[in-house]
Length: 329
Image 1 (cartoon, rainbow, N blue to C red):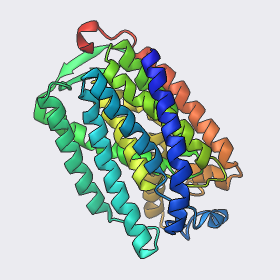
Image 2: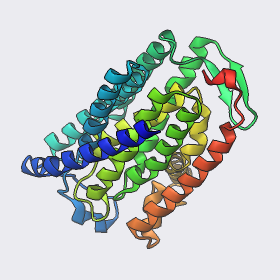
Image 3: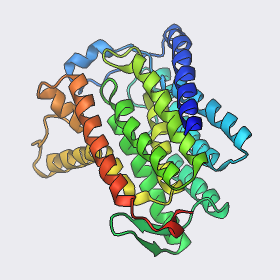
């Protein structure tokens, strides 16, 4: 337990220090965010706020995990980290494209989807062949495990991973939201890994908790920096990577309730808009913008959404608490 606390604290310090030096550099490079014209009008004041701030917590977590792997001589968590870094690099390409052409849209949806599918397939293949992941589908609450054919499981997992990563990305819409919502998710995965006696995996989400807490110092409203797709896709990679590394992908339905809600709000809005030729269910999607349009402050949205996530993470803990021991290793 002390190792977990030290890792989280070290990541917090590294992330905070990295942010102190990174933000002035991003400002000097004019790496400012462009704001969508269709977004809330009061977001226009955020135009020019440095993006790619996710680099601060990415660097902090990467350093901590490499050091931990060296001393513990256990490299399973590095598979998850490497996969998340690949997703983060896709986000970096997207952010770089936005900055280069001075627009809010970066890579095309097809380009991002193809790259994300490739990263997901490689990660799942390496995890499975290295023995760090099974193809048994664990069902929470009922504590039943269903053995699936490896190809079927990997095919299913690829779409879950890509969907999860992009859902986390959609959540990054108001100051502090994505970071604050992801903290209870990382606390859950830390506790679950400890309960399963997978200390190597427990250190990765623990480091993320510390790094995100420090990041929120700079990202809380009014934000001094945005994580950009660089940070949000990296976070999405950690979230889904931990779920699969712990052989509990279906738990994402609970711990990722806000991510799912954000995604569904977009799907429902677009579908209804097309079917009704212009009518809307929400004032704006993703749903955090709907609440903004209803008069909620950004801080209130963050705290409520994070509270909902924490509640569902607690439910998720009870959902896996009766998991048979043989399925944990």
